[in-house]
Image (tube, rainbow, N blue to C red; front, side, top):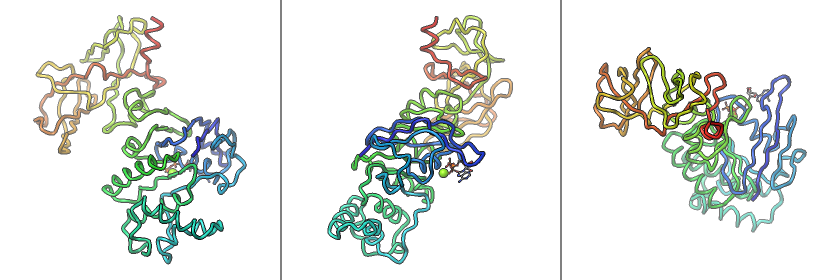
Length: 363
Ligand SMILES: Nc1ncnc2c1ncn2[C@@H]1O[C@H](COP(=O)(O)OP(=O)(O)OP(=O)(O)O)[C@@H](O)[C@H]1O
Ligand SMILES: [Mg+2]
């Protein structure tokens, strides 16, 4: 078991600056999920922790020890890749034992570890099978088993579920979460799937173009996104962002055809331009008098709920998520009201959240 500390880490490949100063402390036993769009540097950060790449600047510590100059095998980590390759000609048992044999571990210790890991992973009955005699999920578990037998201080996962179908992915997600908690091993899990991130993480590190956009518990990122980037990345469908300004007293958000009272007035910020954020699920129907008069366009019926694609005055698009049973008709006008505590304000230029506490303290 170990904590992992990443301090001021930068990584360049020739002229390309991939990581531009990443800081994160991962607690012992914590599951940190690195989430971000393709190419933002997730795998690079994981490979740096693993020792498969060297940092251009900064420091990485595992269990308090600086590992910058340590070989991967000396870092006490185990990595599960997206394209895990099992040895097709070897039985499950031998696939799991292989790495330990290579290290010259005693035979009975190998046997103990393989059997214990197989039990934890529900593979005890499959030890004599070849990989081709297993389902995709079982193979994925063998790949994890190869890591578990090493009893590492840190597990590193790089999108290990992305080759599985949706149902299996959901099931493996739960299994990985339970396993990591049971073993109490520190984990770093890379994904670009926000649902995977929300369900697996103790904390999410949301990365954007080689920088940390926000780190926090999944629901912190959902409830208090620090930037419009986080606001639209977390949550599906994405948060609505509407351009407008505060009225002179800072008590209302206004734009053409729309005026919404804020739960807390911001007198010091009266008149300033702002971006208002409202999640589709934070809008609910109001009988004829709601603040948003929505012209209903497409309706996506998902069963338990439905997503209404509409537009408000001025043609601005607005998405609303409603219970599946609510009756909505295309081309009708739908009046909706936002939940008062669910309005987010951002600076239109920087995309940064306009912080209520700071505003209140200054006022
Ligand atoms: N060895 C390399 N040489 C040059 N550029 C590289 C190298 N490895 C990665 N990059 C570049 O660094 C950037 C980040 O790559 P990385 O693989 O970390 O992204 P990622 O966030 O894991 O993306 P994905 O979700 O697609 O896996 C990309 O622009 C990539 O092209
Ligand atoms: Mg990657």
